[in-house]
Length: 187
Image (cartoon, rainbow, N blue to C red; front, side):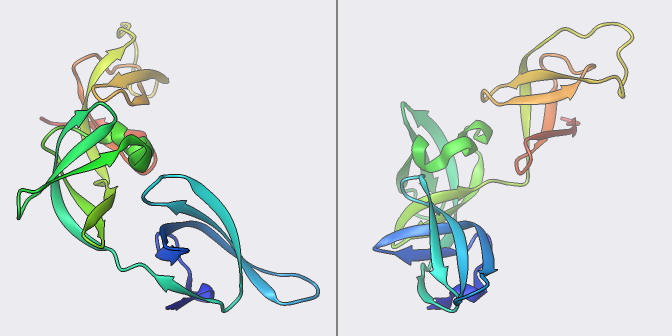
């Protein structure tokens, strides 16, 4: 059990038999009455978000989630298939569960997977991924590093703003937290 006063971003809790991750929280005290905690929670199995208000100091059950190394194998329609590196067992996660994280997935990529009661519920992306530029406007002579930006579509379908000198086929380092171009990779 954990007190709502101890909430932090990323914490996983159990509510009504479902597992939620705290996305945002705010402690509030109105002029009259007791303090409360407003939260935005994401259901880690279904992917939807809810807003919930708790009384300050209210106890909630923590969800004991373990992390396991798994490999992303392939995409099969609306399911993404992962393999446990230790047991070679395969698991499916839906596109709804993963949300925008699917735009960073490449085949054979190793990831930390959040496992709750023996079943995977979420993935933890690395901070940076290297992706190949599949489509962008052609480079125009005279464009420099500080000249501006243009959209580029990566091999996974992710669209990122990149400097004007970036061309199709370039391998770029992308920050998965902010969806920003960092640099060209030396690969």
